[in-house]
Image (tube, rainbow, N blue to C red):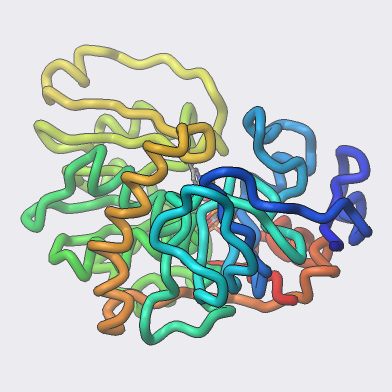
Length: 318
Ligand SMILES: NC(=O)c1ccc[n+]([C@@H]2O[C@H](COP(=O)([O-])OP(=O)(O)OC[C@H]3O[C@@H](n4cnc5c(N)ncnc54)[C@H](OP(=O)(O)O)[C@@H]3O)[C@@H](O)[C@H]2O)c1
């Protein structure tokens, strides 16, 4: 088979489409003929050498895919050859085929094409696990989403709105803010022009900036609020006046999805299938796709992500 290989760490052109050894599914694994994958910021970090795959996962980039089941290993439940699926991967999505534990595989939701389905696993699992499982968003809550135009952000806005919560989202340009309103955001803030902590009050904050926003995020939290940090785009260490946290009886969580064991990912995936897929099928939540790029040209897709002009997901299609 062929796959995108990170030939060395560096700029997008280090991504090379090459012949690599064929795969067979192990016990509990499904082999998928990949129809599409999608680019995540984590893939860029992996390309640069800052985010190696967890032990046992594929060296090739790609945290999600859609496709058709080509073979099933021993002890696989629920899936058979020919099923149209999408999957949350530890790596290896930028390839013609990928193996994955069956617990991380999902049916393609009704109302979504096989290609479009590749835009969903990573963002749906990230938002479901952080906003709903960890931060326990309630209908009466307000959610503040940083990076509303990111793949994760576009899903967070739609899902929280479909659930019935109020949503505030940040982005860096007027065009992006307009898109976030179209996706359902009740209030939008241009983080380049305004300090969100002066404007927003939220019960739950989904943060991708880390250190740079820590104090301001706590300031923006309401009493009993929950801050979930999933990205460190603004640095890894910061000082915090802990009195703010105590006085608000607030919680700060930090999580990663990729490093979780299969059974934990399985719980998240089942939560997504039970709670998110019906909203997708009903048209209340849609994959937000900025561009489709041939898989062999993954370098071009990374350049696009690096340029930061996208809203939503960049797909890699076979
Ligand atoms: N922990 C986990 O399990 C997990 C899982 C998935 C994703 N993530 C993280 O979630 C983030 C989004 O991932 P993605 O793949 O969806 O990325 P992406 O599409 O590349 O989006 C990155 C976003 O960062 C925004 N941004 C940059 N500077 C900002 C600032 N000062 N304030 C607010 N937003 C700012 C950009 O918004 P503008 O273009 O408007 O500037 C852009 O929308 C990444 O940090 C990623 O590492 C974490």
